[in-house]
Length: 156
Image 1 (cartoon, rainbow, N blue to C red):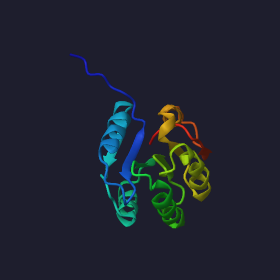
Image 2: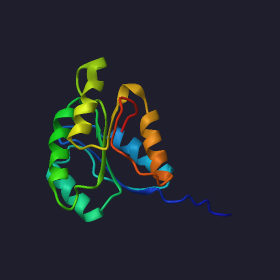
Image 3: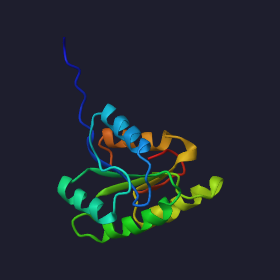
Image 4: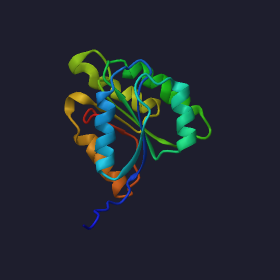
């Protein structure tokens, strides 16, 4: 039987923010990215910032995908992205965050702007679905540069 091959779309690290113990979202993201041809390293839940940074330095991903389900993504994410952007060897790495960015329900989307301003390449609010995250991945597959973008859609 012939083997089906898909072009590699890049190397990804998926992780949660340090206070988030949810794992199902990370498994979903891993499967989604692998289905699209990505090489994925899943760091798991409740990963301390310093471990995320160490793994990014070791694995050199094309994109760090940070997921949050507990609603503290805007707090933990801001702290994490500041550390990443201040690290000389990681300052240019693509980093996206998505999921439940806050505990404010319909107002969660307001936190996307501050996360992008702080240095995330994109912030995806889970209530809007996966459309914007899918568009982001499509841009990666087409080798288009992924400019920093503010979005309230998708789910990373």
